[in-house]
Amino acid sequence: DTAVSQTPKYLVTQMGNDKSIKCEQNLGHDTMYWYKQDSKKFLKIMFSYNNKELIINETVPNRFSPKSPDKAHLNLHINSLELGDSAVYFCASSQDWGRDRGAGIYGYTFGSGTRLTVV
Amino acid sequence: QKEVEQDPGPLSVPEGAIVSLNCTYSNSAFQYFMWYRQYSRKGPELLMYTYSSGNKEDGRFTAQVDKSSKYISLFIRDSQPSDSATYLCAMSRYSSASKIIFGSGTRLSIRP
Image (cartoon, rainbow over all chains, first blue to last red; front, side):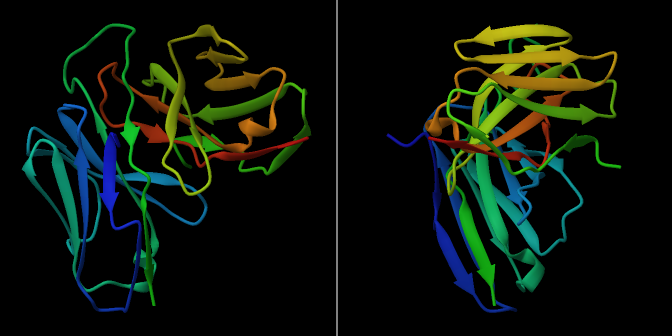
């Protein structure tokens, strides 16, 4: 039973193409995220959705468009792919956005990543 | 300057050694501190978390936070080859799972 699953695992495509990555979580979490991990392993947040509502939108080119059809799914569509988009994209989910639980913190549950290579 | 700095390594130690991994940060508003472990070709998994300053121990792992120095550490005792992975520190201002800022990770290799 995969908690956070992403498809595809690998994606090789040419510059200028449009592609989508899908993410689903079966944990009942309220919040989902897209992170980009570059070749130096640096993880940077791109977007976050809470109950289908966009709550974090970092400085990301508008060629990247997230879509959340329901709170268990968060997809990422990328238009006009560029060489610099090559990276590993991780989906993650978490519980309890906005509610302070004192010393408790739930962190994120990550998917296994989608390795995107633009040629 | 990045908000969170972490030595990328690689760090190679013999099995059984004590490992020390560290991060520094610049934002004094961070209150919640985490360590994630990432195996090759996998997503990061939460290893430990701590709140504010102090120590927390879980089996062979100890996390330390020194807010006055803006410095956090993860110690691994009796290191095993299965501990070989990239370790990412992470931190957040709030206890709820909000925007978490990650370090760039330290690659650790435990030699049998």
